[in-house]
Image (tube, rainbow, N blue to C red; front, side, top):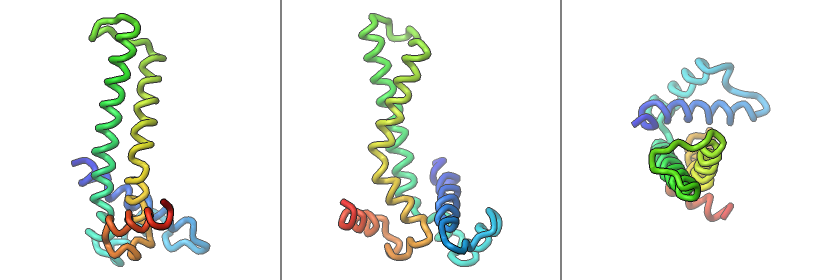
Length: 143
């Protein structure tokens, strides 16, 4: 729900502003100028919630993989050390499990994130509003 309500508009704005900043002559003079221009040009829904499907999918998959991987790694470390299920890990062990879980989630969700970013970019119109068309184009051109 978080990605649907707040995450998509914030990531959409961030992506469009980043994309704009790489232009020779940027269109936007700041956040509020970008917000008003995007809403005026594309409307509220298309302008701020484009790429909703990939954004929500990425958030769900990312969190699912991260929590599952972290819990499995913690369980494995506890078993190897002969600890009980509720015994705490050391700070370094816990940080290593968290880092590995984060890495796993990034690697798995990167393709979804690519589609999300393209659907929220200033050139998203070339995909005709379809995340599937975008994904197919990425697969065809970049593998």
